[in-house]
Image 1 (cartoon, rainbow, N blue to C red):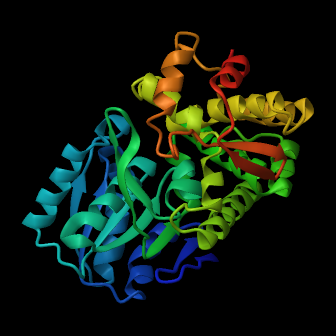
Image 2 (tube, rainbow, N blue to C red):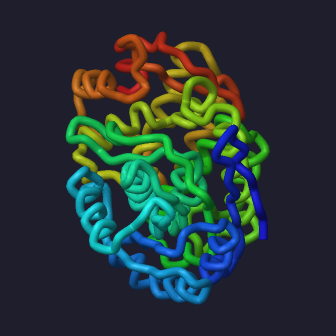
Length: 360
């Protein structure tokens, strides 16, 4: 088992990565001296695959378990869904010593974390991610929240889990499209932080499905991506500085998601489009070379991810949506732009004219 630590001033926790880890959930949580009551939150499909394994593991460790299922997808990521979680928590007398366990992808993790942060002003929270994107990104770092009709994740809180438990075996039931979406975040880490990881992805024969990817490479991807996220979050828990680099590709990516009503792209696909756009903006501004953006875009295409902003989206609509982004500061949109493979910078000097020339 690989154990990584997210070192924080008050709420440090471990990321445990191992094949077969799902059956160890109860014993892992038992070591944390949590209360006996557990509310397991998942979506119906994931619960059908893995819910009973988790419940059996928790009950064998002495926990009392109840469950709440949320429909899959971004369209359920809103406050009304959270209210239903509260109803279940109340009906089952979830106390401050109790724990909410998120079994699912990034949407379930974000929503469960937000519910945990706000129920009784904060209860324990454990992440059990089941998608590649959630494993390498969404489950680590304590960002929780739900969407507002005008923007993604505008309602939320920083709230750290007590544990992140990752079992790569669950990826065998992940749809291929979702695996590729997770690879977008992996590529992101290569661009912003880990040049060696980027090179390993370039050298790999396949990175677009669980069935074809080398399993040793997959283990490396999980460990190095989680380590990158842990390193950044340990330096800046609440995104007052360096943590903002984790938003690479997300600025325009979130705008694309919002403008297409979360129907056309899954999150990782939108991030891939956003990275391509950010790379073009960086070239336009003379921050990195055309050769480097070509390497990035080739890797994104290798993962079978989209690279183009839909032609029906107008520049004016994109610009307007960017203004409601969480990363706006003093009325200026902050972009994360690459300066070389493995390094990025944060700037608010990207004009609408530069965006227009780059994305069209």
